[in-house]
Image 1 (spheres, helix red, strand yellow):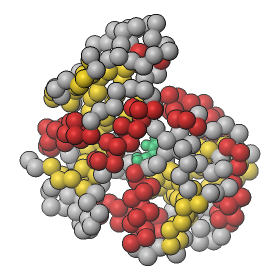
Image 2 (image 1 turned 90 degrees about the vertical axis):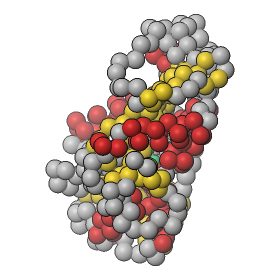
Image 3 (image 1 turned 45 degrees about the vertical axis):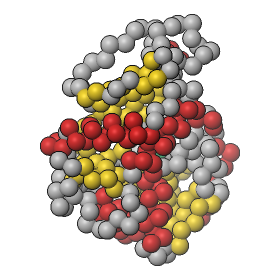
Image 4 (image 1 turned 60 degrees about the vertical axis):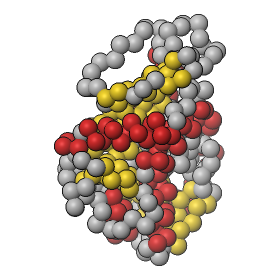
Length: 322
Ligand SMILES: *Cc1c(COP(=O)(O)O)cnc(C)c1O
């Protein structure tokens, strides 16, 4: 992993070190006052054996936004991008062949040892980048997801909706576990006050043979890199792409059509089809209940771009020299 500390108002020199336990003061800011955020991105081994990181700059920019919102020290773009590249370079041998990949987890935590610091930003911080080889998300075959709809609770508080703050995931856990227990759901779609946002860790797309629709960004939910990438790719594949305010009724109307597809997207699962919605205990199939052809085609196109099988006119991939 790559590690760097922030002390006395400045970043030190990042170092590569073996993954091992961190030594933290029990009064560390992050442990009490939630000063913690992270990113998740991947490096892919290409068909040409070249390892490429996907959209590193965009992930770094989002992490800088997360840090700023949490009043934490904001890592310089070059510092964090450099650490990510160093970690991939140091772990090149462990990057599995596609559809596996190397998952990268930059993490920032407040380390000021001060129980009295509830109302001020941390004066010390630790930034590290972990790497872990991951297999295909669909290794056990692919099942269409069951998506429960939550119309009362938001996923998290609106001012944290567009950042990857640790607290957001704790906040989504209760409603998600209840939906798993009560309805056998895989994920929860948060639709507070009838406005469609996203699930616990993925954005939502509506697809058919001609169109790709998704809720228009608001600060209340995450500007997913996979979402943005799939929208660009879809437009270039001649889908009509539309970002718009979406209400619960729009989802139900869409799902009724026989060729309707709904899918969830994010770095971990790429693009996963939803087969069934559950709302107030009632179950509603999406289209024919199967994973649809447009979901599969878009996912394949993104995978091909990440592994160099498809040209990258967007400059999204960063090759790492051995
Ligand atoms: C990480 C995340 C996503 C997906 O973002 P990507 O950049 O596509 O990985 C979507 N929603 C939430 C809440 C997330 O934490």
